[in-house]
Image (cartoon, rainbow, N blue to C red):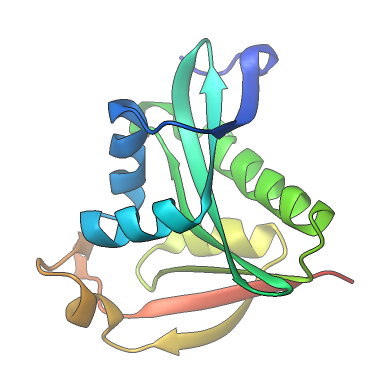
Length: 158
């Protein structure tokens, strides 16, 4: 359905509508955490045929460091390369804005995310044990496994 790359564009988002909010919550179901980093960061949305298909959030965490806080692609549009397009756009944008290191984190059970981030050049840095148990009210399951640990990755400018 969403394979026409001619109509695809990634733009900075000024106003979060309901469809973008749904995308943000697809990647991170903790609304209060999402609201905190969205307020301090910059949202970029991927549009195809005038619909939001994906998004990511960049948040400066230091003078030369930025974190990709949230990456999501609508479930019905997954498998078309949009996730990789978003991550590569975030990398290009962050480095062009002068950041030297980009961090990203995901759950330890997120095999597709871990594959994508490493494919885009990220390297594993650390694991925060029981992060999701301590920061989320409800248990999260992925691939039938309870998500407990957070994996941090980063990429640096050469």
